[in-house]
Length: 508
Image 1 (tube, rainbow, N blue to C red):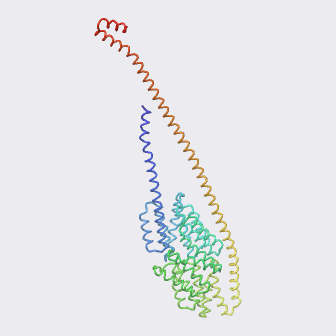
Image 2 (cartoon, rainbow, N blue to C red):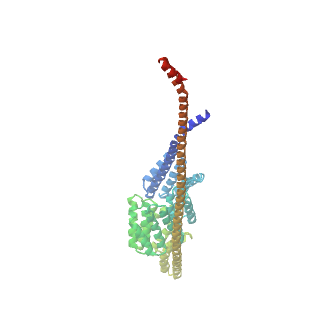
Image 3 (cartoon, one colour):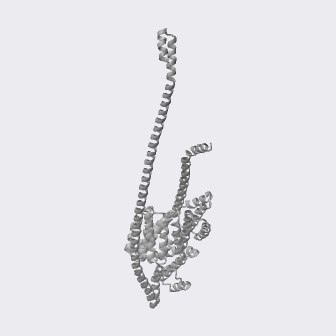
């Protein structure tokens, strides 16, 4: 009885198993779809931030209000810090970043949590980098962001983090390392099969590296390759491109073309109502220097007056150094020697200032020292510039070597990748062959079993038929003599004496 009940239970459950498997699969598929939608929504929000859209802040606030869990809330909260990083009050970023990091570091190690950490460390690095603070810490922050991004569900952010690392090394004047990270970013774009538009911004970064090496031809080639894609870039990338392209013409001393690029940038930002943002202040300080070199001193002063309060407020050491450099240039042009001396006396020595900024100042100081008749100091600044040029040549040779090694490593990595794919395909093919053989063997065994069962059933039926025939024969043998005897007796009763006598003899 128990055995029959168990059999009946399995008969009920077995048809439900496929349904249960389908339901589990649907649930998993629904979770994956929801996760993909979440990532896509955050990606679109990042695009709005890169475009510096006024809608970005409203979308961030909406996301924070509708967040159903803490991770979702902090994904939007970190982006609010990124929004402040691009605003006129970038110091507000710090509070958002610190709170997000405290939360994320307490969470279990998951791809989603790592994606949040990657975004937040990158945001903190951008904030320090924009305002030239803690150069070594900027590199460390970007490296942490890169490490977390490669273990996250947002690996598509890794190339831009690599580009940021390249910029950080560029600021530290470590050009081979900068080029290496940009090359890695280009490799990741290909490996992760990201849109080719991602390469555009990376070539702008490489152009800047070549510019620092005074390799103007290679730099111009990179700029020209990306110029056709300018309309497809985000607002932030367009600003980055035009600013760096303006710098290219500035260092070539083609001030008319440099002015054209910086004015194009200024018009772009004004068109998008970005008059009070970091990119605009950066544009104006560069315009101030270009106007100075074109002897438009009034225009230069006007631009300088507009940007100095901002950079002093945010405490950007390099930008303030640059502002003072332009003031020195203006004073030299106006032969105001006392003003130059006053500016130099008010400054404190700072080794963190990039040498390109020092090189710009040295050009103005040589005019100042020559005007004073202090040719020894003028010669000293010239020696500094020559030493810098020699170091550039050294860096250029190191970078060329690094490029060769990077390409070799890229080819080797791609070869190993191809070999690994071939090995994987071979393993899959071997596994498929084994599965096919196993399935074939099982099918043959099942077929043999079915045939054997059919033969056994046929034999059993034939045996049962034989038994039935024997039984019928036995019955017939038992019934027939009695039947014949009765028939004869009936005949005897109705026959004459002679016939009855013969029939009686037969019956006996």
